[in-house]
Length: 454
Image (cartoon, rainbow, N blue to C red; front, top):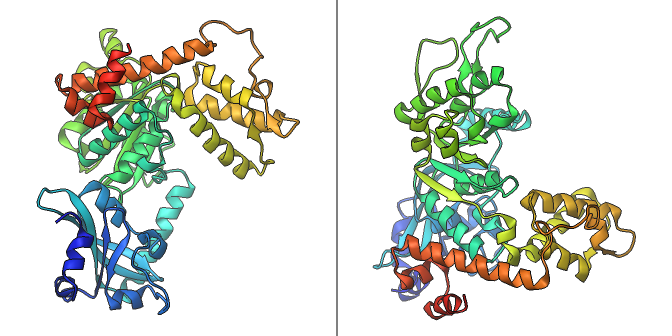
């Protein structure tokens, strides 16, 4: 059996699926590309598919925009007993992956068990209002990005995407390493979205942006009347707000030493103690941290706890700087430019060939954040129909060797970046080049050709 579609075709009378759907109110099945391959008549009625419309073969998002079934296909993990709003009706749903004998995921089946939940409507409405309130007040930052939103097809980007997807399947602590502006929070959101915690909150906090005097209260919360001026009702900390979901601590190197001991307790005991409280509360949260600094050097300097470092460094993921993703720059610039123009309602301008050449030769010390800033500047400064290098600020400062590369240097940078990625993959696969080629998504012959040309 190669696919779920073939299995259904073999079961021409749909006896198996009809049997499965008899245990619930209605059901739907998708293949590995998240296209509908079977739907029960009751499900058609529930989502009000017109009689003259054929749903088979359509992406399931066209029929159910808020569906989680593609995530089940990607992750291979079931989502048991969830609530889903379908045509303004709350339904209890379950989504299960389907595997072939080789344990490869070949699709998913979704079941609706109940849709008569009117008695619970006030509770659902209250939950929705609270969630919107938290999001509006920036207390909870919802996960808006998926791993598929990562722009780029370079070897380095493809490898990062695969590493992140594998990390999403685990529930362990992650440490994201990379220069400023490489997209660490976006990656953290993508990992959360691809994990089994995606229905829980994603709570992000930048430790570098918090005054030390407020950091502990912000992260751990405060008990009622914990100190002069404290909220009489107390304050719920970010860790408890992330219960059931993911807590993202950006710039973890900036966390004060006294707080590091309390965070270590959270990681070890899964308990949190609010400031001024004598009681502990259990918490179920996955912690993803990020830094642009060398934590080991900070450990050696006595600025970061060694025991916390090893607790955080369970599964490190290094984000490549933009200068090592030169093959992605054209695609990234095109995507960001369209997004900037849509958000700001600026005229639709294109990058000139000279501007694109300059973007590919620049070393990008500020990475993707700097790329976006320069493109915004280009949209404002351009006077013609095209954005030129001077509109991007290409000649604001005298060029130096650290910022400008010649076209011949550009080829060397591309070659060196590919070779580094291949060597890292070979090392991770314990010298097995065939396995390394699979990890990189290239043929074994291509891998040897890259190595031969070095």
